[in-house]
Image 1 (tube, helix red, strand yellow):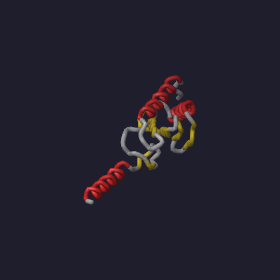
Image 2 (cartoon, rainbow, N blue to C red):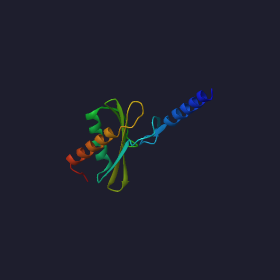
Image 3 (cartoon, rainbow, N blue to C red):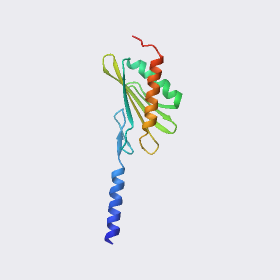
Image 4 (cartoon, rainbow, N blue to C red):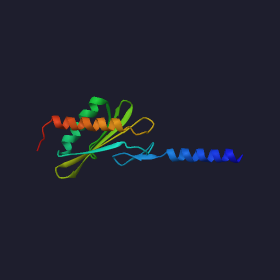
Length: 132
């Protein structure tokens, strides 16, 4: 009886430990696994609109754009049945930051896809001339 109760309590504690919420770059909370690196940050000497346009082009090339927040400068897209969120904001005058997050269907982190999308945004920016 004690063994069964101890096993049941340890199983419940294990499930409670694994279940949780994670924060998106936009600041909202979603159900999923809070463990693992899922967000990549890059900084560029480009304006927010230039990076925002490059991020849109990359997401449309790789998957389907689900939502666009023009106030917070963020996109949400589905790429290979994974959710990708890209947020662009200005850190200081002339320097902008890109946060790229990717999650699998069950809420697990997908660092490889986030890094790939981040790299493609960088390559897209490198292939376009800087505007003043």
